[in-house]
Image 1 (tube, rainbow, N blue to C red):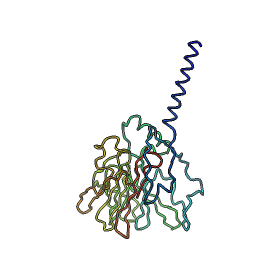
Image 2 (cartoon, one colour):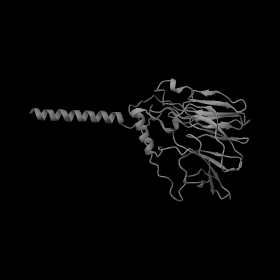
Image 3 (cartoon, rainbow, N blue to C red):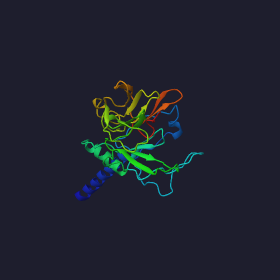
Image 4 (spheres, rainbow, N blue to C red):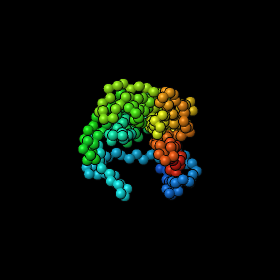
Length: 296
């Protein structure tokens, strides 16, 4: 056998080995536990199945065709209330029936290296990249036909806003880096005042949205702040004040940590029967398809 033939065979073997190694590292993870077993009050906690390259399946955003709508539960109906909004994330119903919505995207950040570049490309595929609109929009169904005929930008003096709450003539909005307030009377379609900063919040991070809720007595505002990373891979110094819910006292202007150890507490709501604060928590990624269950 000639040296050239031996070299070509060896080269082929190297390519095959590298190909198999690449397939092994990038193969998609498959769930081993039935879905019903990983939901409910006592989910099965499988062994971690860490991945060097995480399984990612980004759905391509296609929008809703004319006349198309989500399937409603029995006894309910879904109708298109408003459209043409740029990246709406949080909605809030005011006592007079007006609907507020924050149009927002993640704040612009610098650095992050190759990992951040890959994450940005994945978000781009999902339609989640680009500058943040930074708008708080009012939608009003004036004639009661189920569609918002009136649309007005209340204010754009915001920074990647998300959470919204209103109480006693004051509108509260959570930017990614602060809790702010505006004087606002129900029915108004514009806010002329500049935002008043009530407290700083840990800025940006992997989980930059900040949901808020006011207690039934109207005394305290609760602000959810997710972790800066997936599993603390950037060290704990950057997680100070994160993975937590903060409490802001309106009368005193003071704040304190209310709950901690919640990786990404997203939704917030008060239980009207027992006066309890509830939250939905998004759990860790890259531990396999069966871990870790999100919870409420």
